[in-house]
Image: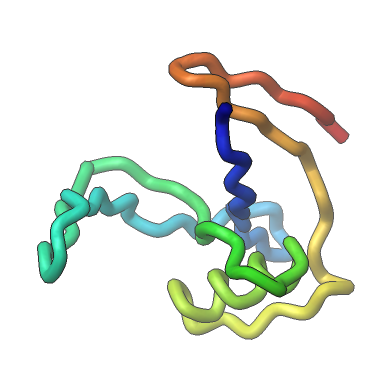
Length: 94
């Protein structure tokens, strides 16, 4: 049985429509291992902690990774995406 993991990705956009992205890092999943630069860019986000709403996760990850303090009313849900093995499916585009 597959375990469902909820995660967020937040894309910061200014009033002129420009996006602020972060360099994507890859962890080698070893205790104390350094993150490796993937030469790719992404929004800010990560996995939901137990007891958090998905909005709380988005706000926490945004602050942790960028220092930007977001508010729930400033966030727009754009899509819900499910990953099935190597396949990606947009479940609920908005």
